[in-house]
Length: 285
Image 1 (cartoon, one colour):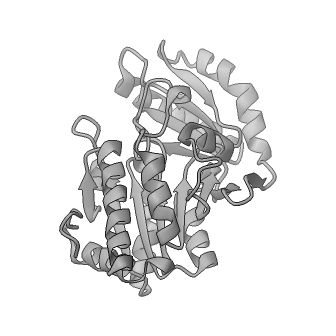
Image 2 (cartoon, rainbow, N blue to C red; image 1 turned 45 degrees about the vertical axis):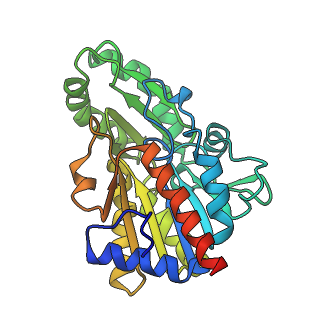
Image 3 (cartoon, helix red, strand yellow; image 1 turned 90 degrees about the vertical axis):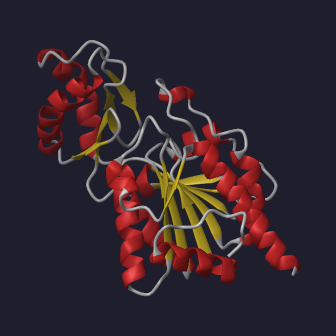
């Protein structure tokens, strides 16, 4: 174990990190975007990757099988907000946007996407009037996500109260249109079934023949990816679960399951840079 790397607190996590260090050319490093590579901000359109993220990823990506950014955002938006396009060293980077429904490859610079679910268009048209009829708290607002729609409560006078009050009605609306409701930190997302980070991660790891997987996330939407890594581990593929958790914004469902908890995006970026350095030293040994 390299001393500059933080130590996972679990045996499974230590095994996962050891496997990554031993055979990085067979490892996938998968990362959420918002809250993991980028700070959570009141306006999601203003989210940008931490300034050290691209240099750290450019140093790491050539040393592993792949770096995958797994996000609910459209792939093109994540690429733009992350600053990933046209960066030397990121040839092994992919962005799995919309929970894997879209894929951007750094090598080609193109996005490939499946056909959209018709229920999303129906919800998009109905949602403003629906929120008005149920008396949604002032300060709630709708985020257009292309293949999904989200309702944010972070700006409401009582963000948690608004969140709890909207969960039931929005869940019913999602079901009516053949969608599912995915809660996050002061956000409720309506999206097609079968779209989650676990499905995207498992399919991608299988596609490239990964022999170890690291996944880092920060919110409830990352739990399916945690479950996918747990399943891989149960089938003999080592994995490391990392939680990005600032002191003020922690999700116990993640921190309780993580092998390694880091204090937000700055700490995640520092960890990725240290991992790249450790692999570089191993190459030169």
